[in-house]
Image (cartoon, rainbow, N blue to C red; front, side, top):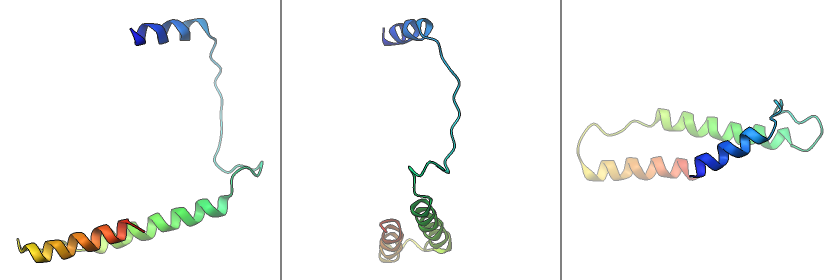
Length: 75
């Protein structure tokens, strides 16, 4: 039913194609904060890739690995 209602609305309204970009030259967005966030994601990703999971089934080793993994992700 919802699908039929939405289809009906879309058929009755004209759609216009619009374009946007992320740089925000109007000053609404602060590219510096975006850069800092991106650098944080890159740093966390590198740390997670470098983290080697234990080769054994030792639960203490896996607990330490998981704690380190989640500690990196929680920054």
